[in-house]
Length: 90
Image 1 (cartoon, helix red, strand yellow):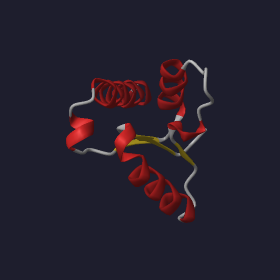
Image 2 (spheres, rainbow, N blue to C red):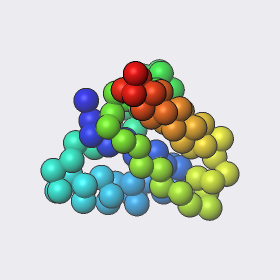
Image 3 (spheres, rainbow, N blue to C red):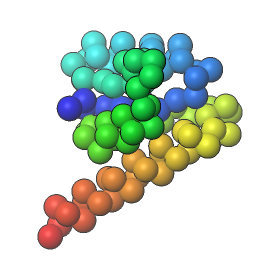
Image 4 (cartoon, helix red, strand yellow):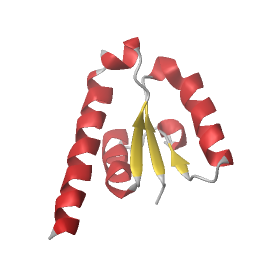
């Protein structure tokens, strides 16, 4: 399980890569879709990673703010975190 998942718009890939490298140098296990193989059901893979990772980082830019997929990823991550919080409180 990764510590962190990075969500970003494809055009922000270089920023996501630099962030990933910096976080890995600090000792975090980082997952971003660079690791997806062509043909993987990327939406299902990303949903599974969000469910399993410790936290999600969303690279918020002019482009990502307009991305339906980045916004959906952000919402999905927030819902997962909320669900975990409620489960632990019981």
